[in-house]
Length: 162
Ligand SMILES: [Zn+2]
Image (tube, rainbow, N blue to C red):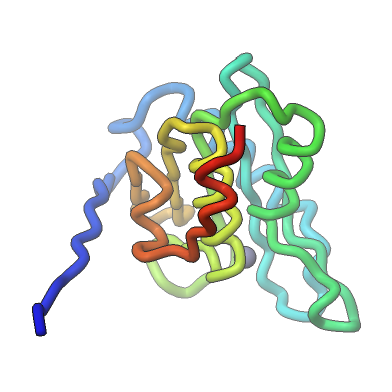
């Protein structure tokens, strides 16, 4: 038996002034779109914004449904839209924020979203920076999305895909 461990590294920022201008722009987009979230059941609005390699920015929010599993998280709302419309473009940055949280640390993506984020990063063949922001609190920055889901489900079919 060999004992192994997984190490996850990220940077924590106390203030937004420490971050790049584009990071701030994406965080503000995520906050803006979170306010338009349809989350009457959870009262937990979440926003996500992405920067593509063509310079375009897109944003999405959580869309709930009375039939609970029918809803979609903010991250998957924007990622699925972007991947559907710009399959050849790479996602440089994903920024996520949630409103109405008591904690001063950022909310991190759910397991479903982590799997989607990691697969999109694998497909594009280059790191997707992930920014998790808490309004009035701290910001976590991951240089690559795979850190969010160590030992992610990995299908050989994906590895061999052109
Ligand atoms: Zn999610």
